[in-house]
Image (tube, rainbow, N blue to C red; front, side):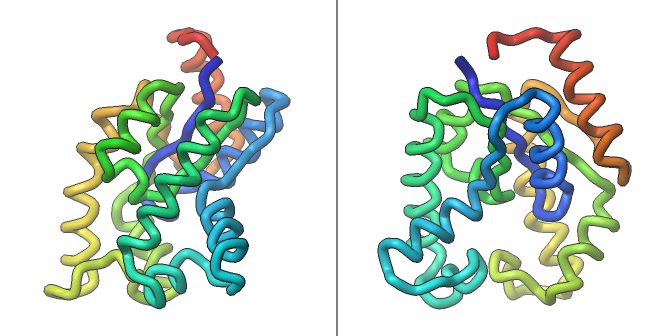
Length: 179
């Protein structure tokens, strides 16, 4: 049994698509960021979102927590649709874990993703060099090849969650991996 995992850059629609996909497949949907936040709250007795965890405790703490939670979810015998954060596949160990499952790369146009991200201000994972768009582009250029290297298929979120879900389900029919 393989989990269905949605990967991709921040704000490409992984969580929304994952929720609807799970509903269509009659499976539970999990968002790794929500699970990380819950785990952090349980361990540190403080309720923070992912950005706050990185800012207050550092990226290493966040990535270690992410890896631990990911391992717990993927070793669960109950099948899930799982949406993961954009940085999750950066770790080789995480990539190895993810690649054992059905991985869907969710994409959206670069400019639109940048605009969506910047609504909340410069994220903690952007490097400090150059303009915000240069920092974004550097991270984009680093991550997209990693996403592509482990994805079984790619779906473009053209703004219609229903359409993206239909494309994923159709790709499962065309390329049936063990689910």
